Image (cartoon, rainbow, N blue to C red; front, side, top):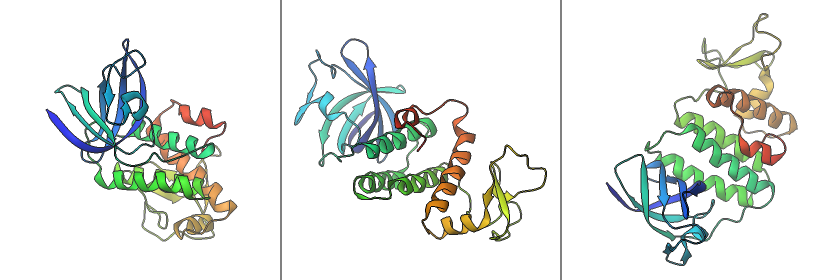
Length: 240
């Protein structure tokens, strides 16, 4: 199977054999694919238009890529830069790496997500320019869960459909989303104040609603990430 001229971004790379790279790529029409870039590491001979393949195969660089192969691990056959690399530095770079790692951990191979691809490009741009980059992360986390079929309503009880009450407390349930907390919910289960959930749903940003959104998304993602920690959170020094 040959795929030509796909808009794409590198999510992650790692050495493969002597001079090659294993590239995790997120593409517009094919979703997440794993590719071998033969000879792309120092000592290799692979070059692409505009320079070496290794120089281009970096996160946050808009690419046009081609590949071929029938197995789950295919061969990168072409790579060109289609726009300037987004300059994410410091905490913004860690946020971008966190987004990339979430996608590798949660997406399925060869599962197209055209709308998520467009939103991913928007997120990278906002991480570069916005001062509210932590809120950008929360929006991406929520959108990613929706794309995977695990989305939930911030404004209603997922079990009975009642509107979230500002004076009540809620917990996250993997099957229903937000449900009203009961007296036997357990002290180790995170609880979320109704008035904070309403602010998050309305996009009202203050310190309390940001903290609540972070705790909520951490609880929702933990169900799907399992017990394996995210490496990008370790790089961040604190969980984004």
